[in-house]
Image (cartoon, rainbow, N blue to C red; front, side, top):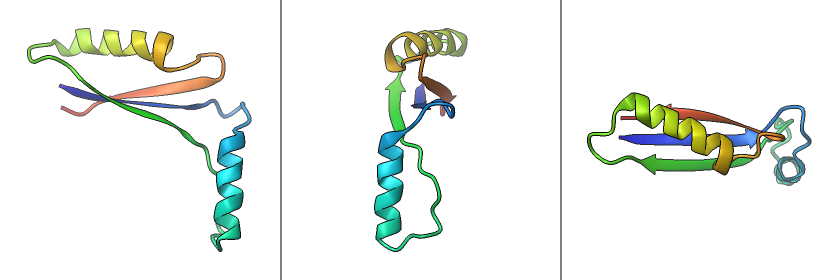
Length: 81
């Protein structure tokens, strides 16, 4: 089983790296881009036979406690197979 975890800044938190990327894109001629939010992506593989419910619980735990900072970041988990 493979899962993907996407971590990004909360919309209420300033994203200076995203702003820098947007400015760079604008200066390269991509004037239609008005906002960029950057984040992190993790692909996580589970051992064969792992139950989906156990994987979901473990993913929620590690996403909340290890992969993200819940004060300023939010995460989304997707199980792909």
